Image (tube, rainbow, N blue to C red; front, side):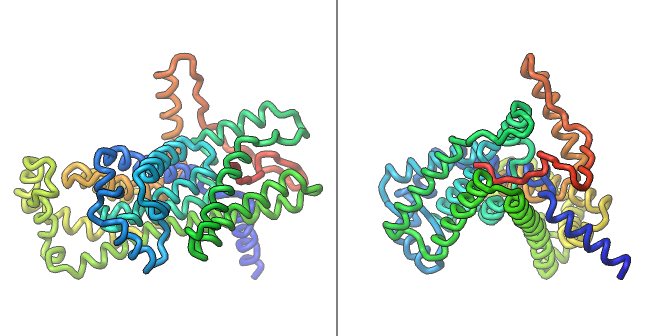
Length: 406
């Protein structure tokens, strides 16, 4: 018991005193927002057939589908052309803003609304990667995905440097305006009866949490209320990050075990057949070259099953996990090129990125900063520095505050 109690105490402190995985949450934010943004831009000429009034999955059919399963889609509030065009443009804008990390608390919610609305409008449009983006868009709302590699982080750092010791933070007028607009839009949708009870609770709950955070941050006379909200925010973030990891493991585990049951995967020929389908052959010569080597087809088939089944069991061995992680990312990159599924592959690579080591991500950030400095004259890179020592008990550290910025 004497050995067990300190371990439990240390674990509780870890999950409550800070939001873990800042680089991992940032990279999945960048990965999924970039994947969705590229998809929307790539399919812009075909947007009418995919999600608009000209879609084979008509507006009436979509209404029936949503009314049966309770899914959310703002596109079904109106069947007008103007509403669709405005919403599609808003989805593109929010994806770009989340990518650069501007007002991540607001843009993550709007990003989720855009993803759910478009995908639930036409449920048969997608290649598997859309399901991953669908789920991760929801999880991102509950993470602090703008701690690093974001405009929010840069703005917060500049505000701390400009603020005198003991001076309260400046009033965030832009954030208040953004959430005010969202409140008015949500009130209008609620009064019009556009939202089901469940979605009313979710959206008004998010607004209530943001309002509570702002009131406590501006009006609380003691530090205890803010500390309590910090602890709750850390727990929510860390729980959401665990769910993202569990979701990725579940995807690979189920995919691997289902493959084992297939006869073509058992005899080592499963990869051969998609390589000979015209629909999955953007580069026919390359596909035929790979399909003509029986040994390569067999190795790729068995290797895919082994990696997918084994990966969840290797998370506690860092070296083996990193090897399999590199193998899976390489496999998805090959799928993107050979089978012509770039957005599926990008979505899976973004999900895999949550397992990347922090040391590698920090080095990646350093390389990106140096590259930017080389391309932009006069720009001095902000390289990741050494870890700061934890404050001693009784000392106040301004940087430990975990907040919901707009």
